[in-house]
Length: 108
Image 1 (cartoon, rainbow, N blue to C red):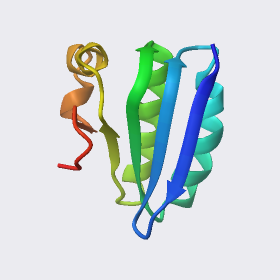
Image 2 (spheres, rainbow, N blue to C red):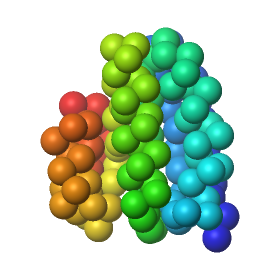
Image 3 (cartoon, helix red, strand yellow):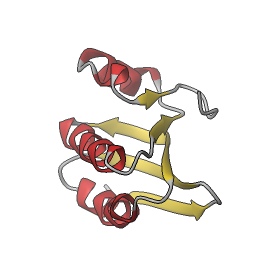
Image 4 (cartoon, rainbow, N blue to C red):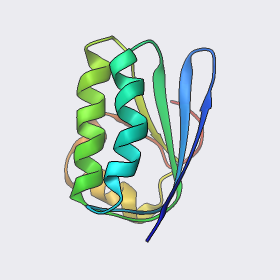
């Protein structure tokens, strides 16, 4: 399965729209996009998962690493527009308590 990734740079944040399946095979593609953004550390990152149909622990791990890197720069990671199924993954693992996960597109 291919992963579709679109990025838009705003004044205060990067917007990353992801589509497809986020798993051990496709996470490196998203990692190639997120790592330079998080290393720069000058903007928050908003990841829209509206079109992600499946995500495994590899995807969760990428978001944890991104969160840790952004925290070093006092920046935030927002996971937006998640489906009920993916929202449950964040909930079950306790990650919903550590990062901003929103089922809508608005940053809370």
